[in-house]
Image (cartoon, rainbow, N blue to C red; front, side):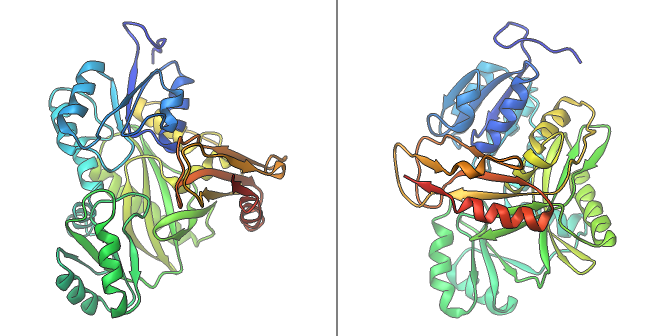
Length: 387
């Protein structure tokens, strides 16, 4: 492959649609290869804006505005990094010859829980838990009664767990309904899922470059309100469960097609594996790969997009812990104890221009045996404060 320099007439360009902390790491990997980076987001000074060659601020769901930037910049690759994007802009861009990663249809399927669940369960025949789609509170109540309590309610479109809740009894119906309707994305329709009796859940990071498919070691994670707070790699699991997880990951990513890295979320009960969701981009739980692998999920994503070889070395066990702000601030300060910078740990501060309660602002990473790494990550994250 031939590489160029940024800001030249012949520069190779990627455009990030969504410029949060995950997009920032992808931008850094692109810069290491001399690739010009255009970062687009809905607010100024987003994390990837800070390391990009050019930055744009736009309503990401404004079809014409997004398409105008694409036409102006003419990127070689368009990388959607969030769910709340005008899908029509991506379809039109693809029709005009632009390369959407992995492809516009895959983005359309995965950004909408209804699309991807029906595709996985009804077209590909993957094992999932029971589910119903609802549009009214009355339909939600009926679906919950059919699924049984507890059950999970999610908007068909949202990100980072926004709008997601667990209904443990009929008394939770009103609060779950209100929470779902306030979510980012499209909350005009909800999915009610039976609570799968699983032992644990994993993310199977899966990379495709058009020639091969590779899997990272399975990542275990703990969530709160649908958003990750701790992850660790590898998740200890039986060889059969791991094989089945890789089979499901390959089936869904083959079905979606295209190139790039996918975060395939799975529920595991003994040796049985159930499909949950998939993101056609780096996954928040995969930030642990910044310390466990020779090529992080972000480097693998870029390699896959460019069609480069996907070989990497798994260095060893590790864990990550997300720091979420406890206050609202227009000038946030993240106070990090010196002990986070040690021979086996470090912290990444995302540089977000504003904080609000629950917003992810940093991540602590630890390299050690899984159990020790996770315990240390939990101790260390308590040493990060809002000022």
